[in-house]
Image (spheres, one colour):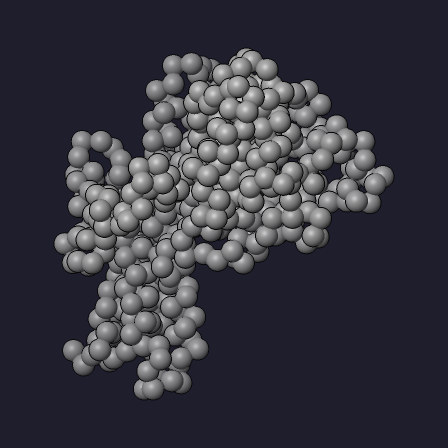
Length: 508
């Protein structure tokens, strides 16, 4: 099953789009990630980026975002409505698919240590990843905001971070953790007085005796009172329940809700819950919702025709330059890994192959990991090439700035297929192994995995070399050349061995 983690870092900058967009761009630049939403709020002076991807890719992207935020954001110069303690104020990981909360906890702690060690940023762990009960809640860690933290860090032991130095820096501290899906939901009132919003927030939030799983604060945003809320568990405390309580409390003050605002993304189920309640469709079944039913039918049919990559093939055949050879190389590599994984799956658990069970299990797990990474690289390669085109088309760049931007984009465009070549070589090793020890009835499939890996490495090498020709950093270009030549040779040798083994075991 594909592994998907969501990350929703909040940055203390909502007034300079060039800063928070640059942060979103470094996330996009990491292969295997997809930015779903990036937005800034000037009143809160805060930006939120929502992205998803394979756990390893998401971890790397979060690190790069935290690094850039520390370079670009100075908390000594920051002010805004929203509480904050650092440049990257909070960075939560949320399990989406094929990932457990425990894995997200491990991810958060691993990232926290790296941020502390390599970037020198004080890191606190919260939520499910908290190592101390008083740090489960973000509000406790962030009490007094950056200003109080700056005064107490290094002198008050309660402020000692989980990772990183216990000293004040202008980028502040970063809170990293793991949690269930959170819905950021704001309601605006027909008043310019913030006090009713603050009183309503106290009545709604769990910490003041209101609804469970709700955090709430009152703000003044563009002259209008706002009740800003986080719904920590929409299944237990749904949106409509929160909406009605705010409506009732507002009415007590002679006020009304004028509009609602959703920050970032929300699960579809949360909206369906509210639709059922407000429309009194208590017996509404998922099968009655068109989009749900379409997905169910596709899953139920399970037909090969339903899973053919027709859209990808059509896009490749189209007049646009992406997806192109690099994406095809990554797809070929992922197919090679999939064939290897299939043969391992057909081998494990069978008495006839009990002697090699442990080795087969290792192949199965590693092939699955490589398949995911190469699948992610299909989009990463297209994004890298599009990045080069974007720089060339950017009329605002000139002189040294233009040359440097082209150089950096070209490096990304070369490093991406280089990674595909490395991964494809690793797949070829696994294919050769499973051809040797795997199920007799599937040796040709295993050898086919080796052949596909060889093709992937060869195509990727072409892309590496063509990018190297325009690189000013000749030492890097020559290093690329040497490495891809070695990768091609090794992958071809492994594929040839797999074919030879298959011929011997298959008797042809």
